[in-house]
Amino acid sequence: MRTSVIVTALGPDSHGLLAAVATTVAEQNANVDDVSQTVANGMFTMIMFVSFDETETTMVALKDALETTGERVGLQINVQHENIFKFMHRI
Image (cartoon, rainbow, N blue to C red; front, side, top):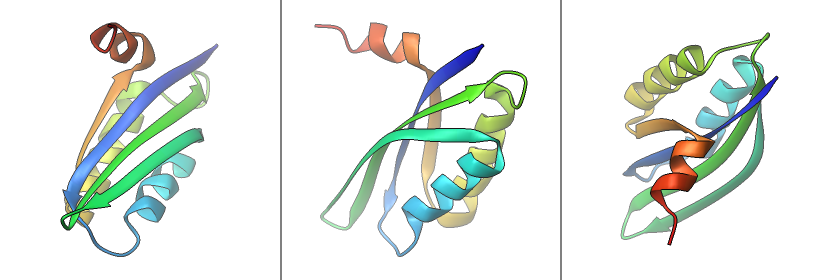
């Protein structure tokens, strides 16, 4: 079964942030389906849609790995299940 999550990141801009997050996603056997990033006033913001097969990784493992990456590169990274994200952002 495929699970989809939304990864958000926020922090001071520096080189290689998107690459660091995407590399961590790949190392967890997950796939980046779509990504949007913006840099404004020196702040990096990103929304990444990620999917994975639950036989290859778990949401907890992905979240833990991304939090470790965030600490290393100076980003606050959050992971939410796609259904929760959609519910929270309904009009």
